[in-house]
Every structure is written in C-alpha cells, then in structure tokens.
Length: 320
Image 1: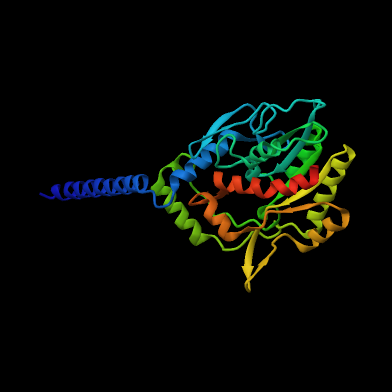
Image 2: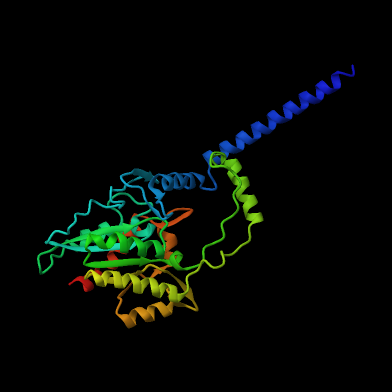
C-alpha cells in the first residue's frame, strides 16, 4: 500500500504536465489564429530582412545582389547591382538625364510592390514632360533598408556617383538623426522565437527588465549632419552633379502650429551653401494613416504615390 502513493504522485504530475502542455498549445493556437500582437507581420519582416540584406567584409549593411523575396505579399527584386532598380547602364547614355535618390527603407519601398516605390512613380511622372534638350529622365532608386547618413554617404561616394547622375536627391528622415530607442533584452534563440507564446513571454520580460528611453550617444549633432551634407555635396560637385536634400522628417503640432523636426541649424546651413531642401511636410497623422501595417510605420502604396506627387513640382524646378 505504501508504494501506491508515489505512483499516484507520478500520475498526478504527468496529468498536470499534460494539462499544462495542452493549455500552452491552445494559447499558441490562439496567438496564431487571432494574432493580437501582429506577430505574423513581425515574422514576415524578419524573414524578409534576412533574405534581402547582408553585411560586407567591413560590416556595412547592403542589399543582397540578385535576390527575389516578398514582404506583406509584395514581391521585391534586387538587381545584381544591389539596387531595387532595373540595371543601370554605364557609361550613361548621351540621351539620358539621371536622377539618383539616396536614402533608407522609405525610397527603397519597404512594404510596397514593384513599381509602387516613389522613385519609380516620380520617374513615370517626369517622363510625361519632355525636356527641351530631348534627354529622357531616368530615376535610380538608391535606397536601402537599415542605412543611416554614414552608409548613405559612403555608398554615394563609392558607388552611387559612378552612375553619373545629373541630380542627387538625398532623403533624410527622423531615425537618420535622432537617438535610437533602447532595444529590449532578448534571451530566446531564433528558433524558439518562432513559438509565439514564448515570444510573448520574452516581450513581457523585456519590457519589465529594460529601461525606457533612448540609447545615449546615438543621436547626431547638427554639426555631424552638416558634415554629411557638405561631404555629399562635394562628392556630387566633383562629378558635375547637383545635390539636394529631401526633408522626410515627421512634423508635430505644437500650440496649434506645425514645427519642423529637421534641425534648424542644418536648414540654415543648407540655405547658406545653396543646397535645395525639398520639404515633404509629413505630419504624424499622415504617417499613421498611410502605414503599411499595424506595427510597421513605412508608407504604403498610397503614401508613395502622394510623396511622388509632392516631389514632382519641386524636382521640376531643379531639372528644368
């Protein structure tokens, strides 16, 4: 009779374990069907990032040459030149006026399909107005996810300028300059993170353990931005290309008046040295109403169409 007690304990423990596993499985099934945390988008984003991006021997982030992937159901093709663009012919044909757009994931077209990126839409609109000299407009999409001012400058200097652009448009947004938010601590492997219940636990623990705020020292001072602008302008001028900046900063409302988030000292310096600033005047409301997904604030196809429409008259003023 004494031996039956340990056996009952083992049976109860086994039943408790089975019940716990069943509850865990049901919770996992709930997260996969209902997906209140939008994990499907997050997982799609992580897969896409891994497929289209890589680091070179110096550790710089770049597009993976010749790859095809998809995000949110939209196909993305990267050329052998590491561009989301048709092959760029070099030397530049005599009958071409070339516009190069340098930037990050926004001009790249993160979250939109082929042909919906605003550089391609801008090219389509520019071609509707023939140039007096007979040259055809060509817009090169030099955007890459994950780039900041440093990556954009070094790519322009080493690669972009070799495409012989007549005009370089440098898109600068908030996260190129502002401090980076602190990343929550991660303790799961990539494989375990695919189990959404475990990922939810990791997220909760991370929020409890991490401090709110930004990483100290990651923001760029105005003088750093001015240096990047000046160096980019010099690279362009040496090859006979005009340089301009696209202000893609999100604006905020303060006391009923729009406030520019682009550093004022940089704006004043660009005016002094003659660098045109193409202001998209994007409001926070615009950003939220055009985002591609609940937890992805990149603009969708409609947003890219509006950006192209805003840029068109400003670009016309530069190229005519």
